[in-house]
Length: 149
Image (cartoon, rainbow, N blue to C red; front, side):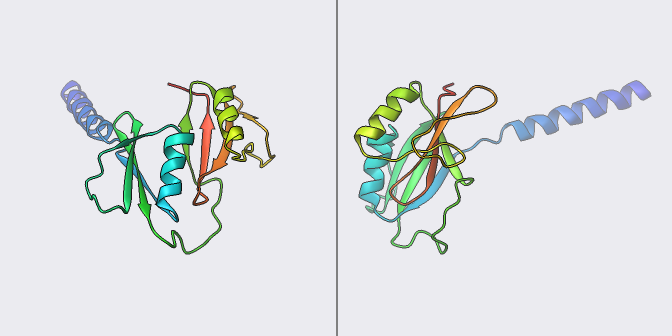
């Protein structure tokens, strides 16, 4: 009887684990004060590829972030009630060549800093991953690191 109870518990746990493992991120949506400037930033600086935008209203741009996820940039004159955006709330993109990425943002006069906020510095996490932080045209923080999968 104990063996049967153990087997039933194992099956229920397996089903429960499978149900949770099917959840995955689909997209992230952000507001943009200037959708054209944000679009140019995410394409030309971050390197995302624009994908089909179903609304076709000129107020949205969608980008492929890889692995079935997308970024939805939504035009809105006042993106948030509180203009202070904390660096702890950020999107993170991994790049193959962080040094090349930094060269590109320097050419485009985009400031970067490390995690503590030191301008022009690269942060190295305890696991050896290098990272920097930049802001998009609407003020959102982005982490860019070299943990390329």
